[in-house]
Image 1: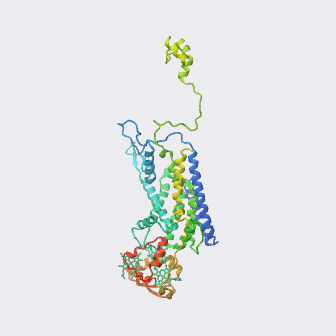
Image 2: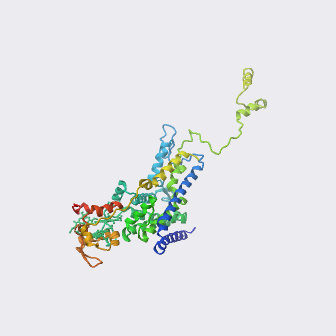
Image 3: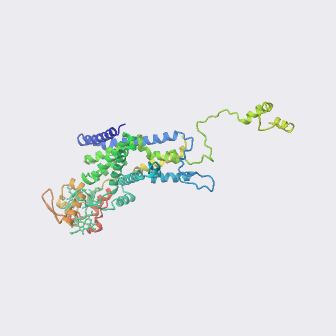
Length: 355
Length: 128
């Protein structure tokens, strides 16, 4: 698919998604629909969808070990092994998984093939994707944890602590008067920056551009829109935070209520988040669950000392060579073919009778 | 299902983590705190700006005031109602809202903000 078409398509969809609550709440006053019903539906779709996906994966057999040998496997004592890249036990797999999930090791290994001087191939150090991905995921996590202040009462200490650390710079005074707050949360801006870089990467690098589809651009644009509405709401077009918390607390305690007048911007933000949540199980973002079930990461390389039986193997009638020779030994000897076991004239015949 | 035990355990942990707010708040009816006004505020009846503006914008307003006083030496603020106020945190806001712990703090605790202003500015002595 043409990449301009992909970009236009996904941005139009995001724009429509912004307009829906804008009209729905701003003009038609459907607060209950957008504040209560849609978020609940989105959460239901998310949980049902993600559980369905995981169960689906669990039912697919993985008959072979797929160790992706980026390191030397365990063999002879004098050959140095790489326990993390090529684990032989569950503990090693757990280690590999922890590093994969927390530090994105497989992205770190990213290299770029290119011709160095003349026709000599070189592998260039290529860490940008890894860096953007780390910035993106961790700022997203911080933003997510900070949002817990809307979903807990009393607010647990770690949420306040993270908020404090996030606002560490205390960069209140912006050159534009009336734009900033006393404390500026770094994570929100890092998130928007990282998302922008991830979009630019897809647009500017020809190879990545070629394999990008609307399904790649759409989540990025959606997350950008969510981040922008959030930042706008926090710094520029303020909404009544206390009412927002009343609404969100109503949602998590299953006593939903719509407080008086919050502001359309909040409903746009909430609707976009609902769409994202409901979209997760059916899109590439399921990797939040899928990473734990990727066979190249979660299988130990023990094929050499544990027998893995293909789950769909059924018993096949076999005729081993031993049995074959047993049956045709006389004839084989008669025509002079070599046999494994020569019948010994006297003692041998007695033995054979026993069998 | 293959490795069903492990996968279901993981799934339960994952879903449980995501549902943390539901468990954490189970059975609580978390109400927004009731606002308490001092006698002085009650007598004044009105805040610096209309209440809906104060609710959403007071932090920006304070930030602007700080900027204007400390950097530009503009010390008086004309409110939309025409009244003039001295741009001060302690001397204006906390003059009327001298019940800081019942007014500012209670609301801030509810929404999880902890303004660092009081590292330097002096909190009013509360003797109610």
